[in-house]
Length: 166
Image (cartoon, rainbow, N blue to C red; front, side, top):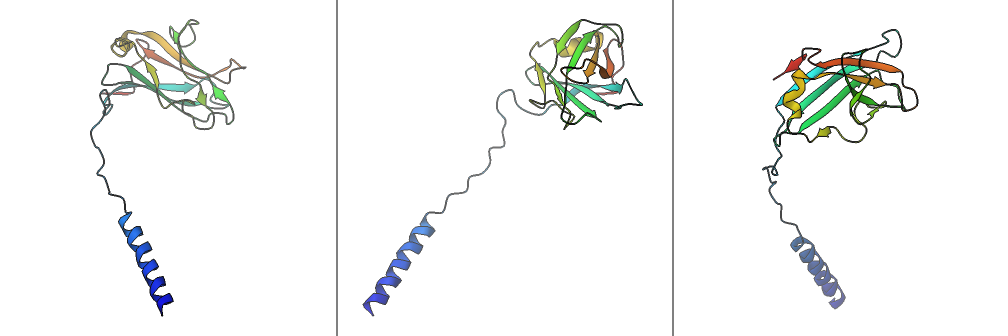
């Protein structure tokens, strides 16, 4: 009988210990860090295929202005080649004319159609976003790091009207 009482006491001590170990639930912090918040100012341009009969890579480039006046660049492409990384460069001049690289963006993943490293490429020059409408430039998307075939391109800034903006 004493054996059963000891077992019951051990079970009660263990159960009491487990019940008292419950963690306190904390409410989420809903405020944002300095410089955080939502992105609501943007300009979007079309990236068209340079070979519609071939891979037909196409999509958009979107320039966002954040709360710190930096420019965040986002590229979304369709029909990319799986397993490849597609270099994305902002070039001087209109499509087919400029050969000088203004900005080398991150490579676009052929698997996802988005930048490989981060969702956004960050341009820290605080005047860049406001200069986009007057910029004489275009974007080129290349087949791979080793093949400089242009699979898609699109005029930017002074060379094209944004397809969407706010």
